[in-house]
Image 1: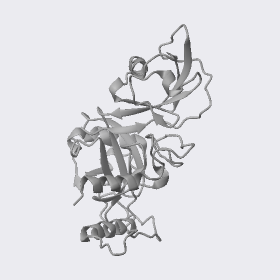
Image 2: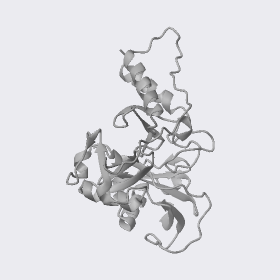
Image 3: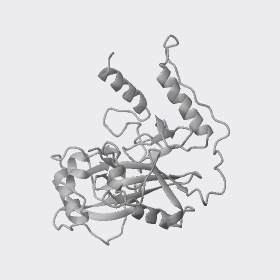
Image 4: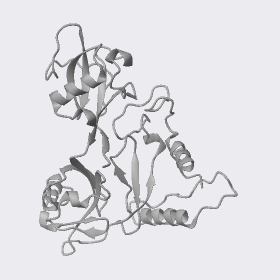
Length: 304
């Protein structure tokens, strides 16, 4: 089952001096660090000799997040080696650790209205679409009346009794939905949000010819933008990833990954801090080279 990596907040690098809500306070030769979770800071005492696995277990005990579903990020780098010690990563008193969670029981619902409004909800996979409509109504966004909502998934209208889990495609952890007012209350069609834009491939080798299916993908993405269908951001991964829609707004035809929203880039939407020296989230990588690495990896995996 695929899972969504969700960075929960962007935080200041300055130490926080609140003393409320300690996570498993320890006595002795411990240091005070801060855990950034859901927009708040939690003071937490650890030993410099504690292994990272021990820190994750303490977070599990304190906050209920299962250790194996946690990622800890410090100084722009994931603390991936569970047997390494706190001091091995250079963590000192007053430092802030970013908690990144792998959410499997909760599904991230990405909702787009036909008038271009977008928002996201975390919903238990065992809830039904009727419950989802109530959550959308509480969000407002012009859909306060549950009876006026029509919800579409992959171009198909879904009824209120359908379980959210049933909407998963290939066990994906993010569900992209389109919500619109029912036909009896729609007043007028939506207007395009873009009037002038440019979209064409960058071809390095002038002798290379793009396959027809690539041109179809580009043209479908172009028509979707012309029709006013916004790119839909996915919350999977640690960078910005957007699904481009066709002109109907019901099908995704391509994926857009902005360079400036890669992990550790200046406009990263997942809350990860910007890289200080240009190095990416993984050691030995550079910010802004993610797309090139993905293409290279694809070519190596599919040499023919």
